[in-house]
Image (cartoon, rainbow, N blue to C red):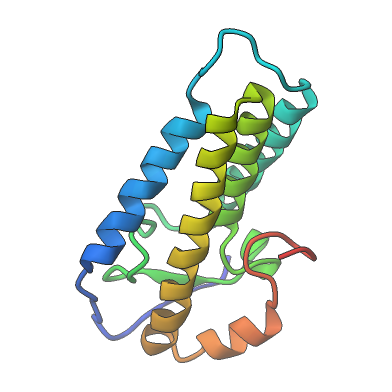
Amino acid sequence: MQQTPHSMQTHYRRSRGSYRLVMLQFAGIVGACWPVSLINLGHPLWLVLCAMGAGFGVWALAHNRIGISGVFPEPRPNMSLVTTGPYALVRHPMYGALMIMMIGIAGYNGNLVNWISAAVIVAVVIAKSVIEERLLPRVFPEYESYRSSTPHRFLPFVF
């Protein structure tokens, strides 16, 4: 497992925008999962998509050092740049996993509220990744090389 700890103790203050994005993300998760109707309208294959997203997320977590992940887009002190496992395929596998899971749940629930909430999650994680992509090269000089060798942000060969 290749992890590169940053030598500088660079810590970025969380902006109000970051707090808003995290609040929107959690609201989106609740909305995507909320059982709006008592009858799920989607095909059970949507749950397979959700399980695939969960598996991708677990794989990403297995390649992270405990305690280095966070919900805010700003780099945390003592975090490491992970470039193995799913991180060799995409730069933000946890965000990709979250999107896949929430789209699967929204599809299974089949309600417009669930779909809108899943769209909110997609928009939020894209916004959070833009912030991270701007800050990570300041903490990890090797991030630019990693970014150029790992062209996809969320889903291998897709996005």
